[in-house]
Amino acid sequence: PLSTKETEELFELIGRRKQQGVTIIYISHRLDELYKISDRVTVMRDGKKIITTRIEDVTRQDLIYHMTNRKVEEIEFESTWEKGDVALEAQELCGNGLKDISFKVHRGEILGIGGLLGAGRTELARIIFGADKAESGKIFVHGKQVTIKTPKDAVSFGVAYVPEDRKHHGAILSLPINWNITLPILRRISEKGFLKKKEESIIVENLKNSLRIKAAHMSQNVESLSGGNQQKVVLAKWLASKPSILILDEPTRGVDVGAKQEIYNLIAEIAKQGIAIILISSDMDELLNISDRLMVLREKRIVGFLEKNEFSQNKVLAMASGVY
Image (tube, rainbow, N blue to C red; front, side, top):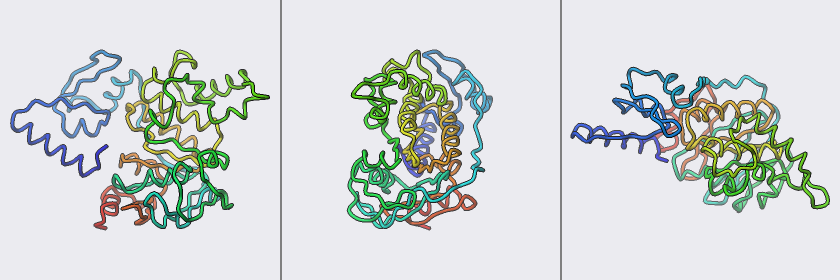
């Protein structure tokens, strides 16, 4: 993942090579990039070439249709539902290099966290989830101070975390889909050491339908799924735990444009249910489109907050790079 500035430098380099007569094949899920640098575009699906055309002769919606073989609406995200009380509050959190991190996120709110690579976004998520140790500071869940030393503690307080690396930290790829989904709730769906298979099947089937997980059967291994469906399995796993606070770290990294829109719809549905969401993303359009508020980090400190009416890419990048 490149920062916005690094991406621009890459495109300038590509442009110079093009002027020198170099032929470039550029592979990307990001439509904005294709329209920015391509002369022609080829769409592949299921190992076959679907279409090749000049980029100016095809619309974004047509490209999405050819990539997914279905009509997928690119939603303009508008958070109109009512926000509730404070679900999570951090006071002067330190650790993992972070210094004096204080913020609040409300029920039903989507708090975006922006910053350049190395700014401390994932480090903060891991401290809140108990994956890394906090050196000092306080965490409050629904107004009550809690001690989170391990992920088990976090789950017991209703905190769930979808990590940025689903292959190593989000799912056990070599295990079946249904096993992955019910991992956090085995105690809840077991009795005297035996799994309640019927209850497991109901939970898994409901989540499969609500998240539109595409699989021949739920006993197939997660590694056999597409990237988007693997990400949905990780989401399903944590939704099964019925969290009140959900941390999403790069939730659409490495998924195709169709799956990305489906994940955006899921995030909206989750927030409407009153779940507080912390969204970490390197995709600036995603961050600005989905978030209700933005918290910007630089060098592992908070440099400011932005309300929805203050959002702009230039402002976020200026704050993140220290020129604001």
